[in-house]
Image (cartoon, rainbow, N blue to C red; front, side):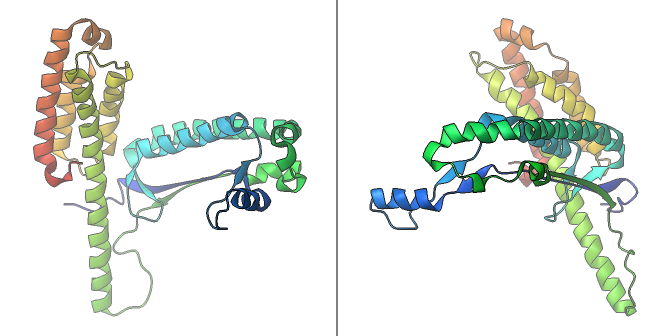
Length: 287
């Protein structure tokens, strides 16, 4: 496998932090333990400082951003970075800018409502309300952060220290092996995405009475459009499978599948054939 992907991909990181809006109440915890004659380590009571609905918009915006980040990227290693193919950069940066805007809009709305939310909490928590649990209004925004960065993928020759030739060769081999392993894992992820999408079609359409949304087909269509940009190694088998899915499944009309059970069963069989063919290529990588 050609693992020199430094010119075809980069490493993207996304880090989002949020105010938890929760507080461990030691007094209530102790009271519960006394009431039930339980040991002190039996549990802990965490108060939700503001109504759950009031922070839902921020949480949803953060979750949507992470989903977008994962959509365009592939696994790298365990340091938080993910492989972003250069071919996906334009779409990634556009969608992530929109996700960032939505996140900060939700945060700003929460910050603006924060004084009122604290007042409401006095009634909601009643005897459990403690003013010291709440950050000052002018500091609440600092509890939210958004950090997105893009860095080059380390190259086997990219180290600048004085080493012996033997050490240089060893380090090159180690970097090369790690990169090859990461690329293999990334490609397994790309295969798995397509396999899972087809498997979902098999599962839903095999049951003539199962309810499904239009997104069952729409998600496959979107994935077929994205996969060429995620195909880091130019895997011909993956591209062939993608084209087969695109030709036989991505253009289907969901309502036709609902209305015609015979057609639905035929499509389920076609999807099952694609699923089996993909499983043969993926080998032990199917999960």
